Length: 395
Image (cartoon, rainbow, N blue to C red; front, side, top):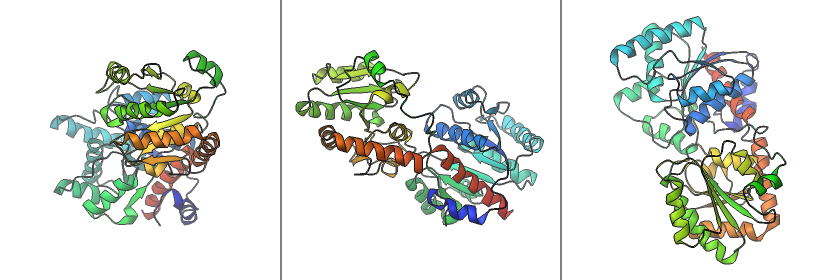
């Protein structure tokens, strides 16, 4: 049985003697920005550290993931330029990584990006090391199937962890890797950090939202792939039936700006219905004041972090049928899954929830329950830990 979320009890039965072992784990996180892949890696590191393992995060000097890891109290090593393209520096990196592995008595390497993967595999191969290498993938691109990639994934890697089912299938189909060597482990969320904090009334007052007003939100970076214009168009349809409803968009500017969105809002005559804000330091403040969370993406979402944050705050979710979204949002259980690029379908789903307060409450309760039972940090880190222990047991 694959070491997926559903297979924890089996894995615990298989490895009872080592289930309480404290491992020396190296997490190689040379992601260049703090995207979903970096968040997955840092969150996993935090969960494993909380389980008592000796955790060391290796990343590029002063990179967003290492800064976030340090902020969370994790030990960070930044003395290897993992993303270098200088061949002489790369050779030096092999020596540096080998020394680090020996000094820290590392037992498992978990890599989260291609450059770190290549460096780790070559360091192990050239030095005759026996420690297992785990490759975690959490993006929408399928793995390459050139000669080097086949060697790297079949012989330079002991197992692959995919963050969503589509990505897992791409490894099985593109590289013909045995099924038991590709695990599915979706992101988990810290359910104690992300939960209602009882300040809804005061926070709504801060943002100028009446307590009795229903608020529908889309949170995430401002990028065309996130479907903001579809959301705005859907809002224009909704207000024809529910003129009192308000909509919120928040996120950091990327390929789009707040001005771009404001122009579209004004063009559709929705300026009185929308709240547009940039980055909010504590996203929980916005989650606290929402009634419905929306994911309008037309791509991306290999790791659906935003859905989990909505769900942790007991919100019903309307999400598009993209990558990990339908694996997180259960249609008709804790929300609705609609086709991407179809604002009329999105509007219809939002209207169902606006019309029925009992449905909103029931879906919201199911959202929180799914987080508590399936998508929490403890379960996320335990699943990964069991993969590590399985590899060590084989050796």
